Length: 469
Ligand SMILES: Cc1ncc(COP(=O)(O)O)c(C=O)c1O
Image (cartoon, rainbow, N blue to C red; front, side, top):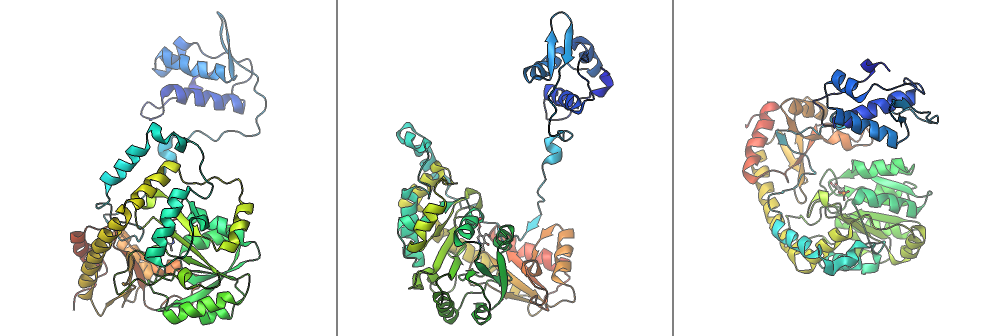
């Protein structure tokens, strides 16, 4: 064997023996090292590569164990016959090369960011510690496929008191994120369902419809939410809406549109509304608006929400509430699916909710986000009328409409060059015609410390050359 064929990279984080083993394996699979070839002795190869004999020995031992080479006593190592593999492994790439580095920005207005400074780590840790104990050995086993009843009960009672959602624990299905639950709903509602989606709207859900080859029809959104008049003219059977705080415009579905939407849904046995209530906990003006599910008399609303905004996106816990008549169909469609949320996490959250910490946390966060929003709108007001704010009644993002000759994509690019992240509203539109004539950008404020908001906005305005009048 030609020793030049092998190389190792001493600066790599992959152990040297593993690099050598992988290299040789590929050479053997590819046929570059033919059957019967004698491998260099450990001593020679170690001298050639400048690495220890033990490292070579480890690599050879692994190749022997996997049947790529054989050790012949007092002679050496020989390449074995390897049954032809149906694939050739890709050239080995180090983890450093494969891992995409997520860009980080010096100023990040992304709408998915939350405040991580006020998380009640102490309480969370206490419950996690208490539960990781022999007393709870049962949690090592699989739980209920819909999620454990302890958490489902807490969710049902929280939903009733805070969102007016009427349900029992048996209607609640827990899963690891809205994005993991939507596919279940889509399959439950069948291939014939045609989805009306908000335009602009939440791209992740829209992608999920597309990935499942479901037909979608875009319905415009104005300052009162989805235009139900438009929906009524379409052949859609399911309307996917974000009524509490439309994503991304921030519009709140008006009372009359709510009634109109519920009436639309009650006009057909196959009609449903999927109410995505993703950040409804954070409403800053007036009284909380009850959910559509709570107003629904005909069991047409499937309610879906998440802990991604109210607690943390990394928890990956979301849930939906099915109307009673869909429950049997759900259970028979997915009889073998275990819950996608680890039971320990479910129980930490259930205990946290049971002891009132979730409500306390929400109250604290609501105050905190309200203050941030106030700061944000106050500083933005100084740039009026060139900059106009909308969607500021709820949630953790607002929309800016800017008087500029540039497009929103151009504004985003300018910001990006200055290491500032904002999103263009045009990204969320399904049709070019629906894009506003004035550029609009999405500004998330959840991730900022209150005192960092003003300088962040000022930097952004400077980049866009927008001056206070
Ligand atoms: C409209 C909408 N739905 C749902 C979610 C949450 O999704 P998940 O539960 O997968 O984190 C978000 C998060 O930003 C959202 O904007």
